[in-house]
Amino acid sequence: MEENYKQFQRVTDRLITYLRFRDNERKQGEDEVWEKIEKGLVSKKVFSLKRRIYMGITAVAAVVIFLFFLIEYKQPGNSDSLDKYVALLEEPVLDSSQIQVYLSSQDKITVEEKTASVTYSSKGSVLINEEKQEADSLDVVEQEYNQIVVPKGKYTHLTLSDGSTVHINSGTRVVYPRVFSGNHREIYVEGEVCLNVTKNEKLPFVVKTTSFDVEVLGTTFNVSAYKNDRNNEVVLVNGSVRLSDRNKNKIELKPDQLAAINNGKIGAVKKVEAVDYIAWTDGLLILQSEPLSNVFKKLERFYGVAIDVSPEASQLKMRGKVDLKQSLDDLIILISSTAPIVWAKTDTGYSIHKKER
Image (cartoon, rainbow, N blue to C red; front, side):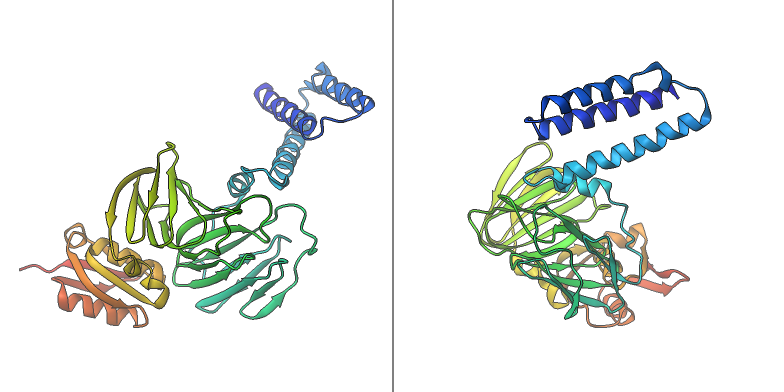
C-alpha cells in the first residue's frame, strides 16, 4: 500500500510541477495555495490503513493520472501530444465486422459495408460515406484527435482536413487530428497506408509508427507497419521523404526506392517499381518473387479469413498479379495451379501445404 501511495504522490507532484510550468505568471496567492496542497499531500494523516482511505487514494490517483495526460496531450504545440494520446488508447479490435470511426466527441460511428469513405473539411466537419456527422465546435483551439480502425477484410479512404488522402488497408488503424494546427502535421499509423500528401513547405507532414517516423513536404508513398510484422517497409512513389528510426538513424529516399525497417532499425534500401507497392489501392497485388507466407498473410488481412500455411509451403516463391476482386476460393485455386501446394477448408479458414511428390 505504501508503494501505491508513493506512486500517487509522484504523479500528483508531477501534475503540480507541470501546471506551474504551463503558467509561470501565477499569482503569489495561488502559489501559496499550491504550497498548502503539497504539504497536505505529504501529511502523515494520509497513511491510514483503513481500506476505505486506501481505495480513495487509489481512485484519486487514477483521476490525477488521467487528468495529467488529458492536460498534457491537449496542449497546443506539444510535439509529444500524439504519442501520448495513442498510448492512452485501447488496443483496436481488428477482428470486428465493422469499420470504426472514433470522433473527438467520444462518439463511435460504425460502417457495415466492406469499404468506407471518410472526408474532413478544412474546418473539421465530417462526411462518412457522404453522410454528414455531427462535429464538435468548429472553433478549434486545441488539437483534437480522431481514430479510424479498419478490420481485416475491409478498406477505407480517408481525406484529411488539409486535403491529403490516405488509403487505409485491412487490419490497420490511423490516429489523426480532426483539424491540423501548430507548425506541423502528424498522424499515427499501425498497419498499411498509401498517402498522397498535400504540399505545404511551412507545415511538414509526419507519419509516426511504433518503430519509425516518415517526414514529407508533399509526396505519394506507401507505409507498411503492421504491429506483428518484424519487417516494415516505406516505398516512395514521388517527391522525397526523410525516414528516422528510434535509434535516431536517418535516411532520405528517392522515388522508386524501398527502405526496410527490421526490428525497429532502418536496414537496406533498394530500387523497386514503386507503383507495384500501391497497386492494392486499386484492388491488385503485384508480386515479385514473394514468399507464399507473405502472400497469404496479405490475403488473410484483405479477406478477413484465417489462412494457415505450413513451414514447407511458406518458403515457396510467387510472381505475378493477383486480382483482389475475385473470391478467396478462386484465388487459392489459381495459386495452387501455379505453385506446388494443396489446400483445404477448415473450421476457421484455410490450410495450405506443400504438395508431396
